[in-house]
Each structure stands twice: as C-alpha cells, then as structure tokens.
Image (tube, rainbow, N blue to C red; front, side, top):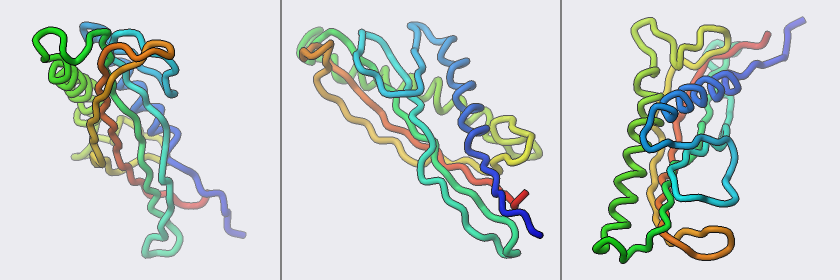
Length: 173
C-alpha cells in the first residue's frame, strides 16, 4: 500500500526565514521590531510583520510520484513616525520611504540573499526533509499614508509589502 501522507516544506521554511529576520533586525539601529501578526497600534518605530504562508500548492512532477510544492511567505515592513508630512521641510514622506526600504534591504532581503542556497548550500540552511530547493523574490509594493496612534490620525506611515516564492520537491511518506 502506498502512503498518501504528503509532507510540506512550508513550516520549516517559515520558521527559518523568521529566525533570520529576527536575528538581523536585532542588530539594527534604531531597533526594528519583528512580529508574526498584524499590529493593532503603532508607536513611532520600524516594524517587520511576517504574516504567513500563502498560495501553498502541489504540482505532480513528471514521475507521477514526486510533487513540486510551491508557496509564498509574505509580510511587510512599515515605519511610523509621529511627524506629519509637512513637518521638517516637507521631507517626512521621503524620509519614511528611505527608512522602510533600508529596513527591507538590510533585514528581509539580507535574510534571503545571504541564505538563498546554491552550489550545495541548502536554502535557508534547511537540511532536513522536506526542504526548499529554490527561492525567488516575488513582489514588493510600497504605499504611504497618514498614520494612526490609537484611533486618532497622527504622523506618517510607509509600508512595503513583500513576498518570496519557495519551491521544494516532496514525495508521499
């Protein structure tokens, strides 16, 4: 009898990426806070939210027994300031955009780029089965708007949504 239990590389991949992001964020000045769920209220700071795994799907590989699992890990970087867009000579929106992209580049992209695998090095350092064999930057969309503290509009906020696509080979166990 053939087993029909199909494993997923998504949990280990999410945990590894989250761990690298937390480690890199801890080294940032000013501090960058990392969480796994949407934030209800912001204080002036930079944040990274690693939301979860999306679009997990399995495609039958040519042998009919092995599958290619593909999934996205998505999240966003955001910076909130208590300053309005016209303060400081009107540079707050561009200053916030610069900070958000710096957080994305120095933490999220650094976590993926330095652990992308290749030449015998496993993606995100994952060596136990199942593990991803490929990672691609998927999306990056930046928006900005007035920020909120509590239920009141205050300050300015920039947000960059990001996504990475992972692929792995899996077989029923």
